[in-house]
Image 1 (tube, helix red, strand yellow):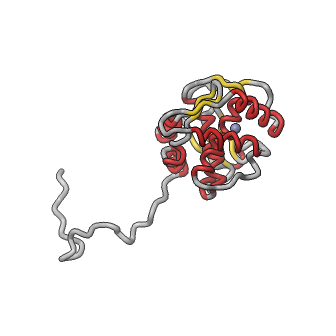
Image 2 (tube, protein in one colour):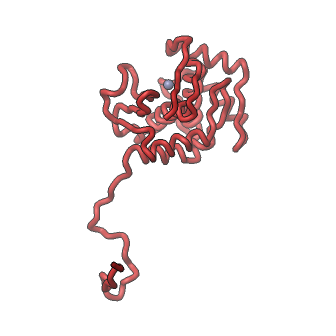
Image 3 (cartoon, protein in one colour):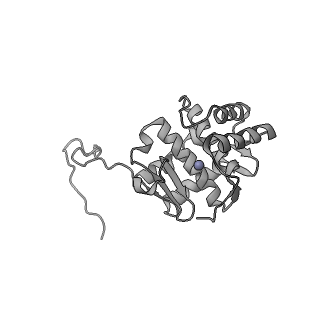
Length: 208
Ligand SMILES: [Zn+2]
């Protein structure tokens, strides 16, 4: 049945249909706001190879797609986050866990989100990675994002990882991934081993 012809709501102002002031604004769900963050310029400019761990703009776009079609889901229930952490990515259940739904309200929270979503980048391509390479790459992506938005380093990021991000970002040309040097890889792996006590193990990302 075709939509019936309707009289204008306000005679003489029939072209003014929006905004309809009595409809409440419905905020986007957290999952969609995270997908939008991954599609933002500040994330899409992050592009680097850290040994076998590769962080490309299209990787973040694949994660955004997976979030929007439900292959990766988002939980803001604090009970899903391991003790001592503010966020985590579970590569077996494909869930991004955050301690609070306000995670995107602060620059540091958005940086944390970029870190966890960079883990999901390895998962969407089902890549098995060395834990110290993987974590260093995630801290570098988090630092790179914070530098892109002009935010300072926070206490959750060691100076050495921040400095590697500064160097990579400085060498980056838009659209082409920059490659970490052997010295940068060694320094990044050492930082996550010494400062965060990550073991010399592997992550088995199994796809989403
Ligand atoms: Zn991590």
